[in-house]
Amino acid sequence: MAHQLNNQGEVIGYRRDDVDPPYLWPDYMSTRTRAPKRPLIPLPHTLSEVTGPVLGHESVGALDNDLTRQHAGEPLGERIIVHGRVLDGDGRPVRNTLVELWQANAAGRYHHDVDRHPAPLDPNFSGAGRCATDDEGRYRFITIQPGAYPWRNHSNAWRARHVHLSLFGPAFATRLVTQMYFPGDPLFFQDPVFHSVRDEKHRNRMISQFDLDNTVEEWALAYRFDIVLRGRDSTPMEE
Ligand SMILES: [Fe+2]
Image (cartoon, rainbow, N blue to C red; front, side, top):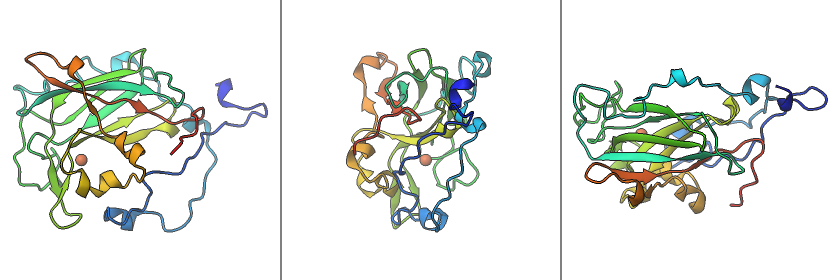
């Protein structure tokens, strides 16, 4: 615990960076009502925020990362592998950290009560999985290519194909929730969630790379997506 305290016994907090995407991005309509209207009041970090979850290996099942084997049959869709490394701001692997993934099915429908998109649910696909990173910070999921889906943000609005990811860094305060996109999606230009990340270089870091080397012949294509978590020791980002 000592390394989370300074010489005076105070908790060493995490750096707070400007957020990108910003809380308010008018093209992404729901941010108009949910963005804070007044300046934020920073609260000092406490020990429970600068220390992180400790995962026991027993808490993540061996098949929890395989979204194609959660039911009696296989889900419909194009089988894919989504994998990469989780690194801290200094490029060091983030080991044994929980990575969670959730997504729509091949038809673009979430297994969720509020999803009213008139596309079929797949009885063999729940759309959620998790795994822990290994000693090199690597994670790997087996899933299916999610479909694009409409939403009511603006006239004829469609989300670019994506999977949602949640990660814990070395501490609860460094939790990251992000979306991973697929290269060459024709819907990028009109997706304000994608464009709410203002800097193009920064935005393009949300697009995975097609990864021929990690495809499995006659079985699945692969996409690689490395994730860099910011934290107390991260180097400043040059945008
Ligand atoms: Fe989504």
